[in-house]
Length: 400
Ligand code: FES
Ligand SMILES: [Fe+2]
Picture 1 (cartoon, rainbow, N blue to C red):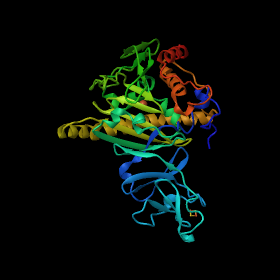
Picture 2: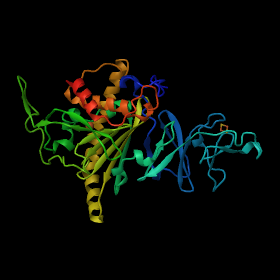
Picture 3: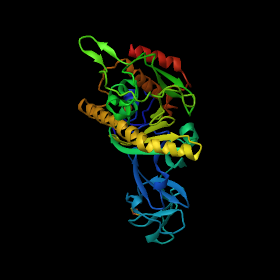
Picture 4: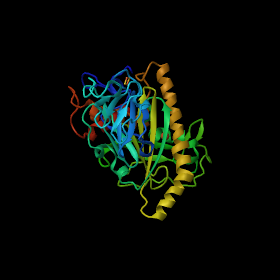
């Protein structure tokens, strides 16, 4: 188990000490695709917990993948009573009702076994939305899925998913998005080389905005410059380094003006990515302290068969390979670098230097501390609702 627990005895005082290594638990997370779950067990690890998914009578269920008898993986078991809502452990035959986790038989001990109705295995709330199976990992009662699954994701008429098992802790990735890295790191990607993209952005500001199951922390900047002269060094970006075939689409989508925004429990949202008209979300679903599932979801809103064909063509030929795969692979490399850095320097709390564009990251930490459900109901927790001015003040102070 990781050094930083999810259950501090009082409200955290700083994100450095409090951001759970295994993520904020009291939220819905995407786990897998609905079509991957059949009547046969499907094993996964989420937040260091082994979980088995399966379908019974068309409904998806999730249980702790651990038989209470001797700890055998339930995912090695099978349904021994066709048509029932049960799974039977492969080892000695303890049999569980998947709808509530209760042991309903121990088949090698006869129908009157003493463990019947005395033992149970943990079940996790799951829901199927947009072809994705979502799981509630929290200790508190699950909130309605509609509270957490963004509204514009639920409204999409086309959903595209890319997933990778990534190396690194989720916190590095949630702090990755923002102009500071996009203007440099992604400049070398094919996706950006065709774009008329500025080299410099100043006056970065993070603002809290409601909507789409918000609040979202939205990134803005007051000025952009295509290039600048660096005394004694020359011009950057170098002339001719981008082909300027495409102008980046910065127009608002659903009233969302910011290109990039963040939300608890660690979701990135990007407008017009990976193709114009798509709204992009990504989750970092923690498997262990050094790995996570990079769960990328592109949402499309075509209404007609023609619009759908156009969306699919643009996505398959360009958006997926150039954007969600290659462009975002650059982020994964940086997260891996950050993870290694933390290990060399003794962990997450190793101090790092900050510069202007890090305002977004500072604001995220502040926002997470203030709003995470995991911290609610603890002595000293900030219970108030939105307080954007205060956050902006603190960001200003930290970045100046
Ligand atoms: S370990 Fe599962 S029945 Fe014995
Ligand atoms: Fe990026």
